[in-house]
Amino acid sequence: MDEAALLVLLEELACGLGIEVRYESMDGEAAFSSGGLCRIRGKPAIIVNRKAASQEKIKILALALNRMDLGQVYMKPALRDFLEKMAGRSTT
Image: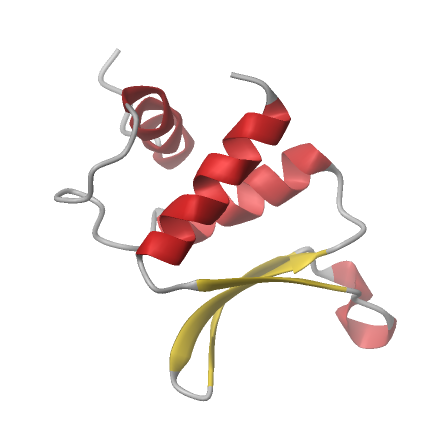
């Protein structure tokens, strides 16, 4: 699966879980961070540095989504395998 398709699948998964994905410019003190999971006005959100490379965006989304309970969530097997590998729970 190419990076663009994987990024779209991760964004769709987040949306399906009710998590807003926001691409923001991170300047100043926030420039050393690429983003992560947070709450904005009590609602979960994943903030991603707009200038980050695709691989970094994928990593941020995957790490944030792996903090959720995904056991009963339907997703494409390739996406589940990727998330499990990122979490170190690979079954293959």
